[in-house]
Length: 488
Image 1 (tube, rainbow, N blue to C red):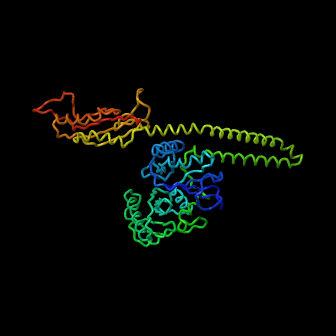
Image 2 (image 1 turned 90 degrees about the vertical axis):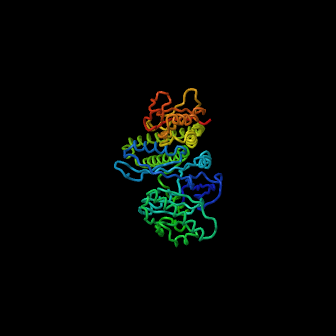
Image 3 (image 1 turned 90 degrees about the horizontal axis):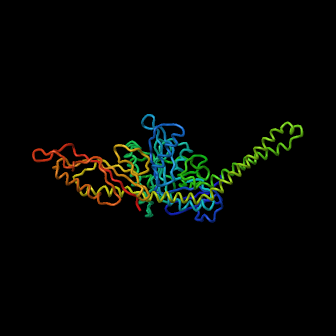
């Protein structure tokens, strides 16, 4: 079946093209291509699959909840999607799988020039999505299945639960040239994947996971002959009408994607504007063609039938006028999108600058460690991190949401809540000294505000002295709040 779109394969090694008019991977540049729609297959190590349990609600509320949680999970990238896995482990819950590609800057560098040149972008998918689509089309319903697939980027392990990918791991390919050494390295990495699945409780410990080897890798024969703990090598069944990945590997998935793409894609809507426009024009042209065909058929009727169907002719003429108006409106919107592209880019750039200015969690941890380094008698029990706009309500376990005053520079701020206890065996004077050492590193630090919600020892001088020593009251718990300013 001929391809209706080009396929662009992206990895850390760059671009590779599979063209609709050709049929094989080539290194031609986008400037040499026709204005054929493009489907992108991303094969990066930065592929994140996250299982999320949500309350079971219906309709728009469910979609809004999923969109909000998806944005919170992948704040740093617009390349994300989600799909439902099934009922949750507890009543009235449902499990969703969130998929995101955090390397948005790398993807933008490849895809924005295509969009700006007018190339329709059908969407972005991952290798794991293509493999899962092949499994579902083949009708395989295995509760647990592990695929091993060599790609130009390395060797990818894809774990599926009832045909849905829940783990995708990319390993650097062995380049020794020795099939036995390569098989040994593959077996070691396969064992690591199996242990992860055991530890994550995705598979019952001790259960041997079926493994399918996809591709003509020379080391696969040696690997299949080995006894690897926790796996059972099985042949991939041949399915009539589908490319054979056991023989062709990734190339089979490309040929599969040329005919049928998975439902859920990751590209943000602004990059797909030309794809939406092409679909709108095609739909309008089909509707107008059908109307014109109906009018030509009416013209061929005899005089008696024409009088009886005059009213229907007028209705059809009105439909033609509405179709032309709709086409004009769509063309005007397209022109508007062309002029507004700069505004969209500026808004995205401003958003990225705002995110870059936000305090980093690693910096917050380094800052929090100063007090504990200065006063080891303080023991940390809990730490909570908050951004100014995370959308959560304040609670007793975290500082109030940080806010920037009128004199503060623009940008996100962060709050860090620290709670724990001070060694209760310390005499009061030593405890007071320990508190002073604990708070001192933050009092003198610019851009940091320290607030105490609960202090471990009273420094007001109002404590009661009994038997030559100050009385010890409670267990000397503490709770402090650190507010961090935006990065310049």
